[in-house]
Image (cartoon, rainbow, N blue to C red; front, side):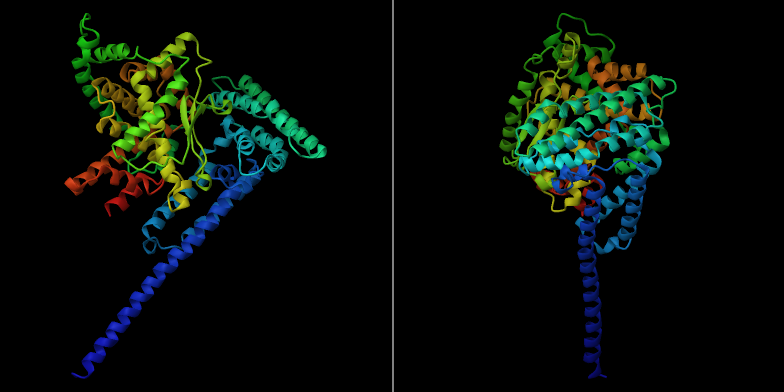
Length: 584
C-alpha cells in the first residue's frame, strides 16, 4: 500500500494537470476564435455601413452607397441574425476581460440594429436620414489618395445618388414636420458640397476629358436628385400640416428601450430622470449659497429678492454681461485651447498627445440646423493621426438680439467650460485615447453616455484641481451642469410625459437660468432627437460615482492621473463595463 500511494498521487496529479491544461487550451482557443470572429464582424459591418468605414479610415468602401430600400433592409436583418448566431457560440466566461467587453458591445449593437429596423423605423419619418454630403466631403477632403483617384471614387459613388434619394422618397410614409424641416436645411447644405468648388477640382484634375465629362454629368444628376428630394420635402410639408404629421415624441415604450440600448447604463430611463430631479434641487441650493455671497460684489445697490431662484437669476444675468464680442467669438475659442492644454500638463492630470491635431473650424453647412452650436468631429481609429475638428457654428444668421442672448449664455466663464467640454480635456482628449484602445471594437462601437459623461466630468474635475477657481466660475459651472441635468428632465418629459413648449421654456429659462436663444435651440434639439440628451448626466453620474468608489477603496494611494488614464484605456466602452474591470 505504501508503494502504491506515490503512484496513486502521481496519477491524480497527472489527471488534474491534464484537466488544467485542457481548460487553459479551451480558454485560449475561445479567445483566438473570438479575435477571428471580430474580424468577420468588422468586414460585414463595413459592407453594410460604408459611411462608417469611411469615418473609421477604411477608404476602400468610399465608393459604396447603400440605399434604404426594403431589399437592403432585409439583407441587413439577415446579416445581423447570422452574426448573432455566431456570437452565441462563445462562452462569455472563457473570454478574457477585454473580449468580454467586446462581446457585450457586439451583442448590444446587433440587438440595437434589429430594433431600429423593426421597431423604431426612423427611415419612415426622419427626412434628415437621407443626405450624401458627408460622403462627398470625406472623399474630396481626404488625403489618402491623389485627387484623380478620389475623383474616380466619387464618380462611382454618385452613380447611386438618385436611387439613394428615391429610396428616401419611397420610405417617408409618416414624416414628422420637425425632421422635414431639418432635411430641407441640411440638403440645401449638401448642394453647396457639389457646387463650383467641386467642378473646379474636376477641371483642374489630370483626368481625361471623357472621365471629366462623365463625372460632371454625375454631379449634375446628383444635384438634380437632391433638388428633387428638397422639392418632395416641401410638398410633404404642405401635405402634412402640424395636425396630420407624425409626432416626434416617441413615447415611453420606445424611449425606455432606446435608452437601454443606446445609453447602456446600470440606470433605467426613469431612474436617471428621477435622479436628475433631485440633482436640480441640490444645484439650486449650492447656487443660492454662492449667489448670496457674491451679491454685494455685483448688485450692492439692489435689494435681494425674497425669491431665492430669482436672486440667482439676477446675479447670473449680471455676471453674464461679461462676454466676448460677436466678431471675436471664434477667435477667443482658438485662443483658449493652448491655455487648457498647459493647465492639464502642469497639473499632471493625464498624458496628452501633441501629435494629434485639434482644428477649430466653422461648422460645415450640411451639419447645421440640429440645435447644437458646438461639436467635435474626430478621426476614425484607422486614421487616428488626422485632424480632430472642433466645429463652431458662426452667429451670422442671428439678429443682434439673438446674438447678444447667445453670447450671454456663452459668457466669459461658460465659454471656458464649453472649451473644456468639447476640447481639452473633454471630447477631443478622450477621443484621442479612444482611438488608442488595443481593441478596435471599443473604438468603433462608441458609447455616447461614456463620451458625453467624460466631457461633463472633465468640467468639474478641472475646477476641483484649481482651474479659474473663483466663486463666479463655480456658479457658472453649476449653471452649465444644471443644463445637462435639465437635458435629462427635458428629454424624458418631452418624449414620455408630453411636456409642452411653454413648460419646457419655463424649465430652461427660469429653473435652469438659460438664455432664450439657448432654450429655443434646445427645444428644437429635443424635438429632433431622443435619449441623446439624457446621456450627459447619465455618463457623468456613473464616472463621478466610480471615481468616488475607487477613492474609497484606495484611500491615500489614490492617484487622479492613474484613474484617468486607466479609465480612458478601455476605449469608448459603456461605463458599467469599465467599472467592472477597474474594480476587479
